[in-house]
View (cartoon, rainbow, N blue to C red):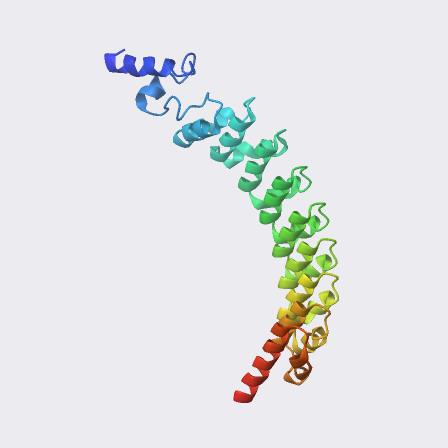
Length: 253
């Protein structure tokens, strides 16, 4: 061993002893393919493992069955896709999350019922549209909201009566205007306000009578002008001002 090589090797052995017994030592250390304390496959540091495999991605496949979950998860980021399919049922959810973001979308159906919410979120964000309806009954509302953001318009009605307000808000923001009547009587004013902002004139006129002022305010912009004069006496200042401004604009035009 050359003197300079021996110096590099000795420096590696001294860093937590991780270089001692490493199959890549001293070749990788001398070639700059690993750096003790910074890029090391044997470290229990995700940052160091990631830096090592980022520099040496061809070695990732060797760590897909590693006992340390974080080493498996990081290896799954860099290994070829065909090598990580077997990790769809890995015991660690972090590993499965990586897999869910990388395998082809048409292979995600086997992960629809994963016990981890974050895994299912990744699935819901990538699943082909024809399969999305299989997740409308997911127990977690965040997954159902993600599904609602991606469902074709013709399928959105399946979530119009969802138990969670946040899901119905997404539905209200995406339904075609002619279908918004399905949510016009929603128990949550936040949902009705979204409906009012997008409603066709007839539905907007009906929502001018809503018990919540911000729903009435949202309806002012879409309601026919002949329904606005009563709103100039609305108990809420913002509603009165909006109605007066729209009436004034119509007269100026």
